[in-house]
Image 1: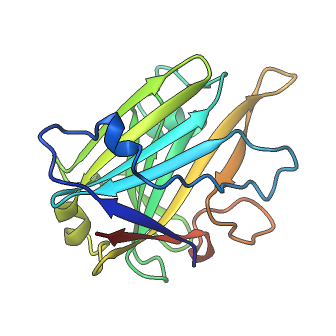
Image 2: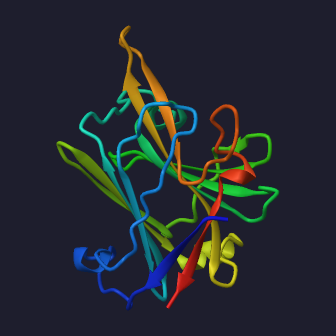
Length: 211
């Protein structure tokens, strides 16, 4: 199983990680889109941990960020049809249950609980106060940073000893000739499926905490 080693940092006085600390984090860039012949834009993922939090950061090269800004009150329609990054955390290899965070560059969060066969509970939310997100959209890239409390990861039975089994993904919406938008699905781990599917055990790797 693919593994990313998450380095430890001292407890921070601020809510997010300073740039000089992110420079110390290992870069993970080996994303793929097995169902798409065209090369994908560069994505850099990093993670760090402290005594209280797990910090995660995406840097995505993208000069044409697509956001669905319709008036719909359903996040599954707006975030689900926007460029975004995704993190899935599983409690076991049966995916029963697993927890999903889908975050677009405008910092909208779609969090939900899932069980096998794509049974989604969109009424579920990450524990209150235990998740914080910020983002930046530039002319050629965007970044998304996430802070998760270790308490929430332990309470959800996701952090086991020093490992969190994690799926790391990206959805890129590309404009078509008729004006519609179609997604390109991008994953850290190639799930070896004939069609795009992140909701499967083979799409996961490991985040391993190291000191």
